[in-house]
Length: 188
Image (cartoon, rainbow, N blue to C red; front, side):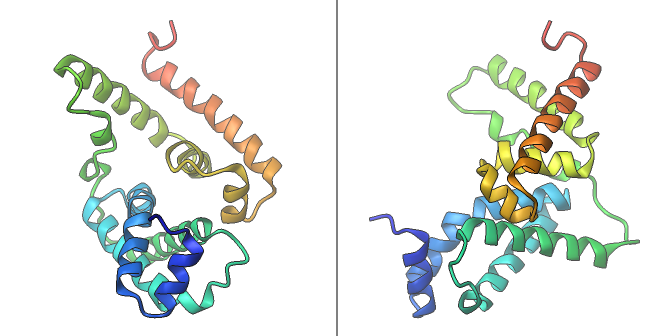
């Protein structure tokens, strides 16, 4: 039986270890994805994701449920990433090559040619996104990759829903233009 977030949270507050494991499993992919987006290094992303779950555990009592749990988790993830990057300022950083953004594009059900084409398309998209502003890249990541609703993004970023919609539209147009510049055959 799949429990909703509120029930899992209540059981976690009561000390139910199995509920905590289920909560971590439910959100670990999204937390890690946010961490990869900001940290650009798989090892650092794993460390940040672990720190996020430690903080969630420490703050279970502080979450009152007046908003959805997912935006709270993602905001906490984002803030921890930003704090970590601030602490690291001036230290050498690994490149984004440490995180393979196209790893999910290669499916075992595909032919090698299809997998190669998907990786190439993923590489092109990743290069184009890497050239976008941080704000545009973040809004696309939240909407298109994380699959958040406009209202959830508005809560997370503390902006009106209309702002989220216009930023998403602008970011999509910017991404399409950047992809066309990188590969003129795109969309032809």
